[in-house]
Length: 252
Image (cartoon, rainbow, N blue to C red; front, side, top):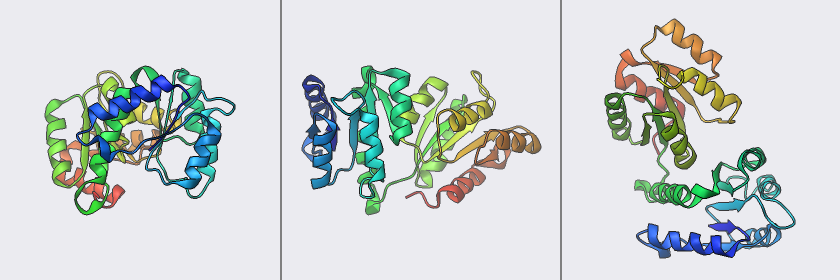
């Protein structure tokens, strides 16, 4: 991976975190660049599986570098994580430029290392293919347990959340290929959340609403929220797994 960060102490902390967090730290190769131009030079000479870019860089900011990477055919598909203390301004700028996710710097080491562990697990999955990840939000522990069991048995990687805070943390670290959202949640209606993810957060992965509502009402809410569809809870786990497969193809 390539870490584009001009603060040497942050780079040292990151390298130390890698050493402590991975069972085989030597399996993770880290290159560093202090600014956009040195990063670009390294990217022209080597292949990277992950690029981590700080927003505040000398001469050219991280958003500008990310936009340049996304315009290059060779680099357009490489995962990019933006990091910063810049808050909403930095988040909006880097995501608009093409970053896959943004992490605030006070939490970056914990969340970024968690993301890297997920990437490593996916790369080493049977057959060498990446397992498709599903993020499930539901306030019922029983529903979450049954859903996790069914989807994992079908070959998917599954992350579950009972509340919005956990959901948002996982959304920014798991990189889900599909999101399942219960409509009737205590903190917010699931269709309102889906609508916000689409219209405000720029989430483009499939989103399914899951609910015990009557089908006409659930279908209406899914359309209004720009969700990819819906699944009735009464249809059972087989229908839910089948719907996930329709949207994602296979689990790997």
